[in-house]
Length: 322
Image 1 (cartoon, one colour):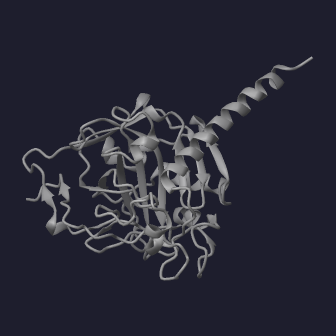
Image 2 (cartoon, helix red, strand yellow; image 1 turned 90 degrees about the horizontal axis):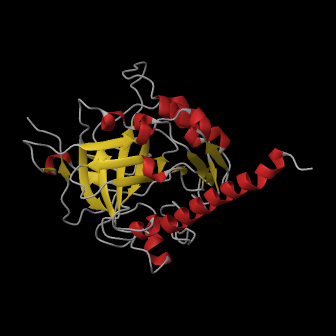
């Protein structure tokens, strides 16, 4: 006689396998399926300087590459009298579910129900839905972010990745299609010494704790609503009804191979705080992929690409200059 539990086991196993396959396919689409690293200045290490030579289908030598340095005195105001707002909404205002995974390149949270988190406004022509979010961070406090503001770096950068499901049937098609993706970049900063000028970021604190479950490469952890992670807390002003978050917007690419130039970037002007304890949870992550040679072998940190030439692109902003 079979118990109810034994009958349910194959169903649970199948659901878990299906989620793994979705994550694997999305990872392959973004990272090109060809081995690469973040090693710099080491010939033959397959680092950022060599990405364009590793796969002929990648766009890493294109003219609209990311990340960039945002030079604020060269930014254009789209409409200073009526700045466009950007809004993040979550269906039912519920905690998000999904899977957080150490893929060797970045701690990545794949959203379980993709159509629950929506990005709209900011002069986007369509609504975009979240696929995943991940982090780039340094081995020390002086580096980490991919984007820089007037040459200033930050210790960690969040990328919230959304795709256009109106014009594209799948995320994989959107990732290689014109304007298929929108990415929100949030640059976090450490508080000044002995000064705490902002409240605790509950979502970031909870994610840092969850990273203890994915320290090893290729490990994963299924996140349920009981974890209580509200994605909107990672960029709180994006959901504020009273204060529109300010951003820098430009056309660019994925910052990892295949570097497809399909991204509308929103680099947020608000810089939430992260604690030393939280950022250490990121730095403890292990990887055999991020660095093949040099001092950071076995570690994931310093998983950032250097800034790329603007090549005549314009950066727009909804920041009102008095």
